[in-house]
Length: 417
Image (cartoon, rainbow, N blue to C red; front, side):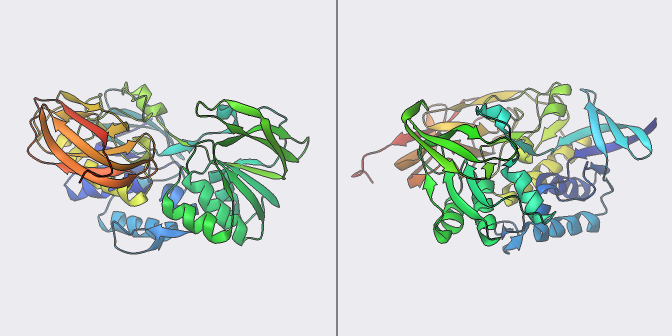
């Protein structure tokens, strides 16, 4: 077995992993980036629509252009990388087992950055009853088939779920000449970004049906139809509202799950709210010297945010590898009314600055976002509207790490300023 030692091993070369590798290298660490695909860039390569780079580069890139920009930075920084290589094991000692074209490699690192991205929920996870015909895809798989492999996936399409990839594929398939019948969403609101709902559905006349879901699938060899029905607030199906929709293709855009199998092997504690690691405000996990960033930590709605997170984590991992600071305890961040999750989940007891990222549980109008540090209100902002699909980011300075931090939503009266 080949054996190699490095300061930092980065697993995954998507927007978060690429940024982390660049940042760690520029901070003076010996870095190795490992990617299982034959190319760098991760999911960006199949995202041929624009909208990338607006926050990070102040440019409107397509996914491949954004990936090229990040890969150029990686190569200019002189970061070595391995493609077509799979990390199959990781332990608490930061020892990685990697499958390469030359055989197994044992990689021993001072620090590890987890950046493996996420995967899509499938029909099996949803337990949709019915037959098992061809023509049922997750939205990301359909995106790869259309954009990378240049294949026609069907003719008459129904999309279940209004996640961003599903909305983008609704527009993409419409442009390709397919009949996109409708998008069906179980929630009472669209779960994708507002810009995607407007640009991908409304601009193309594609209907969005809310508070509904697919309850049956029909067809033997190829999908022939789906049955849709309304649901109540508790997601119970109203069988008096069923509607059969003829179609030969069903796309599932019903959520993403952080890819944390390796994290579990390394003893990393996970958050049941995000399905990603529990991290402190240096993005170090519960396992000393192992860090996490990007969609493996929590799902980002914008690739730029995943890259920004990666830049920060790469710097902190390099500092750790150089012995500038040690694993530290900290107080957990409390999740108050209206908040679905907050990252980081812990604030180190040796730090008085923190950047909080959070999402709300549902759409709110005319509310205040409040952050308390002990009994003191350290942040208060009135917002006219806040929605779950858009991540909120705020920076706090001069907090007392010995006191609790709580993030919450307070609903206010319309007449209150």
